[in-house]
Image (cartoon, rainbow, N blue to C red):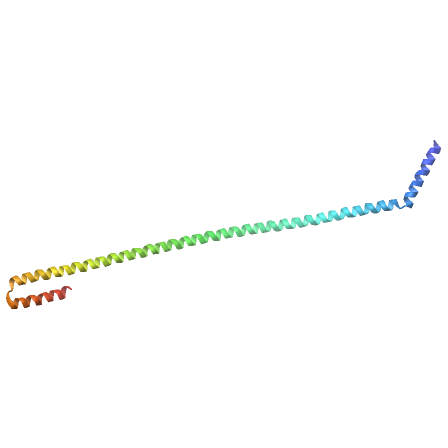
Length: 160
């Protein structure tokens, strides 16, 4: 049995020698080093991507806050403009109503003045006719006709 162990040991030593001669440990070490370097590079790349993603997230959050702020500003501006338009419309409506009221009042005043003028003219005509009858009844002849004509002209001149 000792001899079997000896040859097993010799075989193991020869096998290890062949592996060293063929540079298998260096190849395995190189492969493991390359694999470790690849993993390191992937980790670094993942770290960079994560940082970029965080930077983009922060940028988008900033832009979202800014957009929200701008939207609120636009809504406030629209509200102010709507209020201004409402005030302007109310002012114009009041001006329109006041203008129409003035126009109606002017027409009423004109109608009143015209009615007063017509009443005065009618009164003058009635007064002249009455004066003519009274004078005609009291005064007779040419002198009466002249006095009546002169009186009628005087009344017309004073009343018109």
